[in-house]
Image 1 (cartoon, rainbow, N blue to C red):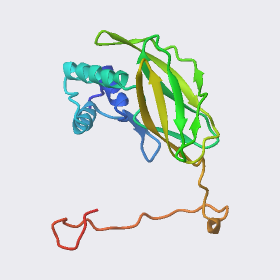
Image 2 (tube, rainbow, N blue to C red):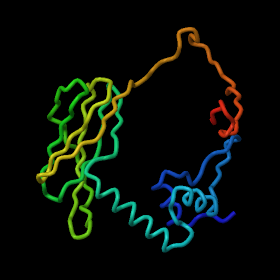
Image 3 (cartoon, one colour):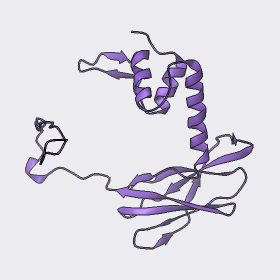
Image 4 (cartoon, helix red, strand yellow):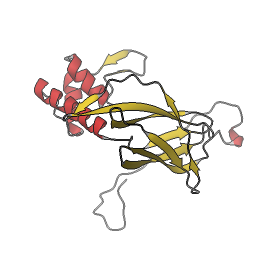
Length: 194
């Protein structure tokens, strides 16, 4: 097995692909280059050569910096939730939340973010971090951003911090065997594929 070079490892991590793991015995295992290249290819990324990796990293950076808000923000009750916003460098950013009941919450706290501006095709884009309060209710809401005459929004999902265990389990430890299932041919009438 060939160990990946740093550019391949960086690219894999940026796409959320693990470059190492611990097996069932606790032994540390590094994922080989061929496996990383194959997994990234499955994600539509050409990582087979250095030029392809550099192009993929550049494209990933451009897509990240061209977004004003994350695609979705997920937070938990009783916990503050930080998130980034991108605006033209130097422009003020106004952020608010519209709850699913129509109520508007303003006054989001801004946190320190010392990320340098990014040159996006001749336009400097700055990044700011805002923090959602811990008292937002469970539900599906929207975070809104207004900056430089542009308005945008993104979904905000607030989940419970802990769902708990069924009472019938009590405090004892338990385990479960995964259910068995059969994968069927989706072309068979009356049978759905799993």
